[in-house]
Length: 275
Image (cartoon, rainbow, N blue to C red; front, side, top):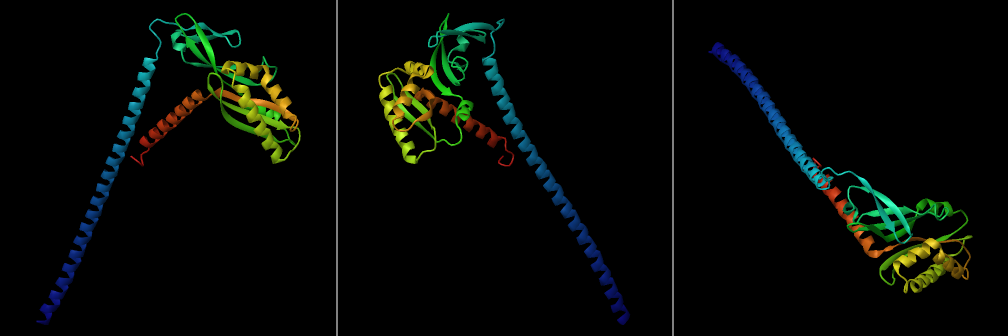
């Protein structure tokens, strides 16, 4: 009986070893299956993301080419130089295009530094076309930033402001810059700002927008301001940095916001993490 019991114990130990081997093999097979399933899931997810991005790119390209086709040149047409009159300056410039109608509602930046002997002013004009002619109307005039940096020096103080006013025919935005000869107190700078705001409000009331731009180009407005502000403190520079129509400024701001929103939407759509 003892021998039989010993044999049974050995047999039972071998059986347990076999069972352990089978369990290990099954666990290995299960892990391999899990790995393969995970790989399949990740590959399908990556494929779906790539397809989503490709669809977005294809739609964007389709929109681009459709817009390009809409704005494409007419059949058999060639570009020409078309004259554009600037009645404000009694001048004429030329634009290179297929047709006069394609120039309608476009803008021109006219640099006045050469005419004003180093005083850097940039005049922005809007083109209005008819069947035979193309004329311009002024939208804004601004001072180039490099000129302002060149005029500011050490040992001086400056005062600037941006105010909204109403002239004879439009609502306008004026930005001015005042630079003193030496360092001054804050009270002097605030007095200079107050006086200029009052003066500009009274000056603008009875004048049209085009008349104001001509006064800035000729330097009439700046000279009168300089003489008036000498009573408070002598200035080394008195300039109008910007003069523009308020409606056009609002339109440009809206366009910039819409462009930013479009770019943000495109980035969120093409981001694979969010997809």
